Image (cartoon, rainbow, N blue to C red; front, side, top):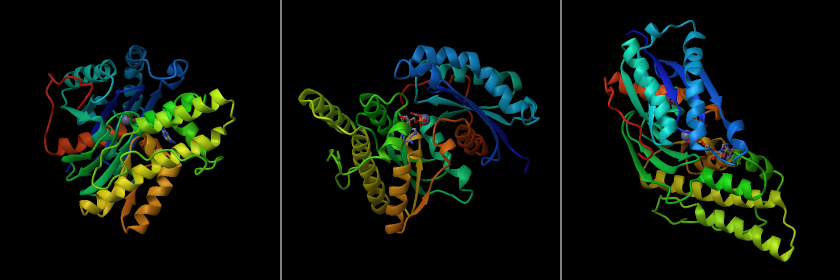
Length: 334
Ligand code: KG4
Ligand code: ZN
């Protein structure tokens, strides 16, 4: 069989990314232009600014992804692109570019769901990983538990009801004056604090319900900080970060293990920006070991938004000749 080279394009939020992956698992290039510095002064992603920056950077990223490997567009087998979920204007820039490119180079277009893309990042570092398995997806916009039944078939058994895990991390970081994006900053600060200092709530921590809710935890942190400010009581930021993180991680780990047991899945994976969190990785590793589950963790660089994961997800559709047509539209929600 000939080698398959998929060009992936990802512009769902504030990373402009392009990558070429060979045969679904071998990363040839992984180009990411992060707009974090552009959005930091606003304390979060400004959608219109994100779209304009994607337009500025997309062709540079794609050219770099292809030409840095001494490939040309004629070597590309198909163009995979994120079409949902995400910021609609941001998605449209990548999708329109991918459509035009696929038409120009006469190669199929493959629309990719961003969440399924995150999950497929697991195939990169774990060449032996095969479905079925359970994946905890924890990102800025989503917290879900997904059963990966086959390479193309995904069933979500629990989802975010309000704030996603990453959103709760970012809002807690903002309340503590740490800056944006907050996840990695809380991760670092928490190492200096006590995770039992404050007893923050573990929301929806009930057996057999795999949905997540983090807005109560976020509000509890804000209420705690407000109360301290009003009464003049000093608080220890590292303790707040560690206690918040303990509550968030406890819920994600407990639900993941309970879901694996309920659905009799022996293999667990994790995906999304929050899965690069050191405490979540450590706690899930321990819980999986105790419960005789095999855990797969992607490298941190493939946890946050990237285009390698989009190429990998597109590869599986390519093998089935499941292509998209040029009427494919961007959707903010799946
Ligand atoms: O998957 P991602 O790059 O983008 C979305 O699809 O949302 O995830 C971004 C989220 C942000 O909320 C960021 O704060 C969080 O991932 N994040 C972390 C860490 N690194 C990134 N959260 C906790 N700990 C980290 N080390
Ligand atoms: Zn993402």
